Image (tube, rainbow, N blue to C red; front, side, top):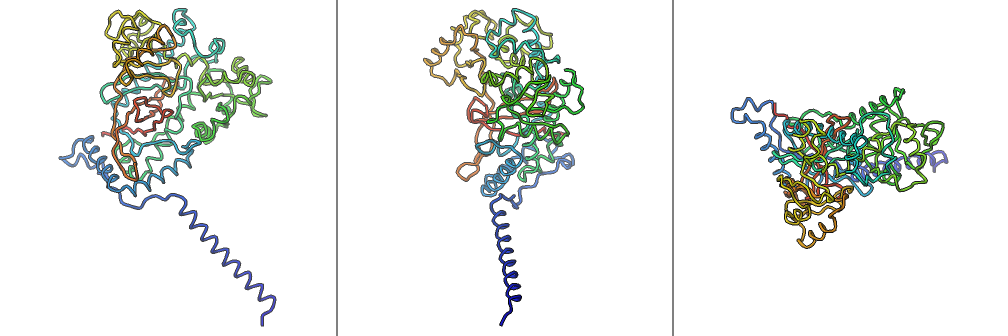
Length: 512
């Protein structure tokens, strides 16, 4: 016979056992749902410190290439382990906000190592060309002839004329280039909204912890700097100070539209600013209020606006954006980049700087840099001009005759949209496109350079295979200083993430 008291004790004991079982089962389920890092052994990388002690292996680059090949061979032989590691890496990317609304950001299985000299050359040329871009934007306001080169600047001219309160006309820039190890050519300049600055640092950090490559990166790569976001913040603060801002810790608004915020680079940028002591918010430009000499979201006043959309998007909602635009016009807030920076993003600028009749506007160093590192470009309304070979030509006849050596592009497009590559286009289609574009200042013809290729491991049908990808390299230049590099790959010669490409992390090869 049992008492009511003893029955209650048994019930409580039973409940605790059941709860414990449920908790244990739940923990196990969570553990199985979350991808786990592999415990398999990946080939050990030969430590760089031992290389010079080995007379047979005195060339760091050769040793590195052999060690890199060992890892790739291991990946091909162990696809299940690679897939497991890859799932874990993608999981970490999501945790670090390196995703999109449709999934994780596309990234390569292996990184790219560049020699110090290669990185140095790309950085130095990028900085010189950044000064060239600024020179053209400044000339736009000073010289009627230069201004005539940009008859359709995409934004209302009064927006472009608004003085931002600081001198540099472009601040946060990314310049896109092709580099095959010997030849370096810049193909366009991004000065209104250069994407990828947040993800690039994050992805480098994730790769440094990736079991497949962490030893190789540790022994052959330079220490982690993560300076892209740091330089971005420093550039904005410098503009704010020159603009006349007095606050030690100004509040930053990262401006976009709501539907573009979730899973975007903006969230990473915002988090970095907050972590470093600067209150920041991702804000919808339509919801901002211009009152009492300031720009507000609710009762929160912003000191700096970081524009994080292509500027043309701000033309879409004229009535909703009156306060936002009014505050920029009245300099009630420091705006970075300034709206006038859109001139630097126009491909007409490439035509202007590569035309020798305009070289008197630039320094000898800048002219040499332009001739060496920028692809010959002409607007399609420059019907009589000088070819890349230095001969007088009719642009229409020349474009049709030299089809395989040229690319046709709209001057204001991004993401590779509207681009026609002569070599891959049917002759009749190319002729029609040239005839449609002739006389139009919003189309350019550009010298074609073979897009560099790289062989990379990729997962296909649960196997690891080697695939050739096209690659371009894109240095960030913030406030006139090199800040880092974005690498992009694609199966198409139009290398762009928006057009289905992916990101490849870049590391400097430590050759000491």
